[in-house]
Amino acid sequence: MILNKEPQDLFDPALYANVRKPLAEAETLPPWCYTSERFYKREVERIFLKVWNFLGRADRIPNPGDYFTLTFAGVPLIIARGDDGKVRAFANSCRHRGALIAMGEGRCRAFKCPYHSWAYALDGSLLSAPSMEKTANFDMAEYGLTPVRLESWGGFIFINFDKDAPDLLTYLGDFPQRVTPYNFDDMVCVRRTEYTIDCNWKIYVENAKEAYHIGTVHRNTINRYASAKSAGYRVQDTAGNYCSTFSMHEGSMALLKGDAGFPVISTLMGDLRGGTTAPLIYPSTYLACTIDCAWYLEIHPLGPKRMKLIHGALFPKNNLARKDFEESVRNYYRRWDITTEEDNVACGLQQRGLDSPFALPGRFSHREPLVRDIDNWVLDQVL
Image 1 (cartoon, rainbow, N blue to C red):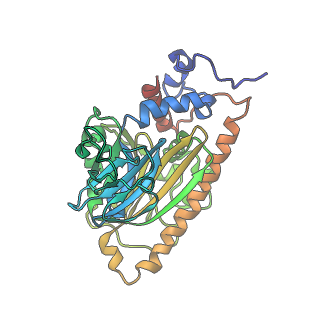
Image 2 (image 1 turned 90 degrees about the vertical axis):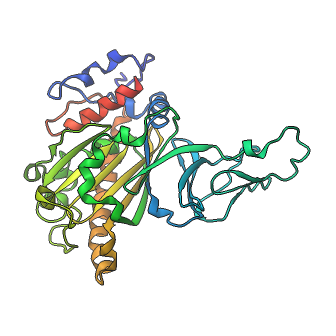
Image 3 (image 1 turned 120 degrees about the horizontal axis):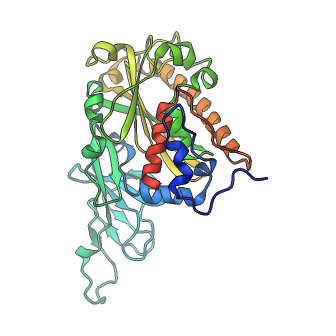
């Protein structure tokens, strides 16, 4: 008897009524939410193509002509810094017959299509279109690259495919005020690490916002200095499309117990000098802001059972001038590499279990309030 069977009426709200209950009574999302192609396509349509999506730091392309390419939620994109210093996003599709016009990352003075040599300026305007002089009513001004909305805050890049969506700051609500003391404009991303993981994007997001797993998955790492019991991980009140926790602990959350690091960020006061603020911007951007640095998890959906994770390491600019920076930063990398791999393995195991024909919804612990909130936010969009 197959218990985990995707229903025909997949988007009937009645199927999800138990997820909507208070935490002590609620069930987890049905397993098909993590395995169904139909559910995933609805998430792309109603979440990723509608909201502000995080695409890393603007310091990845610091100079005019710098660019990088990616495919996000199935859409090929170019992110480029123009001659005017402005960062822009474009659909990576030639306006002639649709070929990709750029791949990878680098620096250029213009983009040239590898198929028929149409060329585009860094602001997306069409510079040249060979052999189009006999084409009737062809106006080059009407055939620039298709722009995609891009806005920045604190050195972070966000894109939105929906021209009618509210602006980024409206979407973020009071998030910028909450993390102002960390002074992200003064931080630099010193390392980006990419992973491809065989799990649904929601599994990783949920994992990022609960401390219940720390005693098991991270028992020899994070649990030694910031266990779920000792650090508290209290849920913060938020206004905007994000949720957040704060935890108190000794030393930096970004170091293993006993490892040396950098001084406390000078702009932090009070409790912030002894703990970590950890917001999750919906749908899939996690930030951890601790006493001496910050890091982000940038999650790209690749299908119902696959995702890309990008880990970014952020430090105040003045740390980079320290003579001991290269030596000391290795302690942070070691901690992140170990704990990220621990999470990657755990999330992969969860996906494999949810694929079982006998998988059923579970129940929430009192340590998982934000997992329930995340799941209900998803349902609010998808249904």
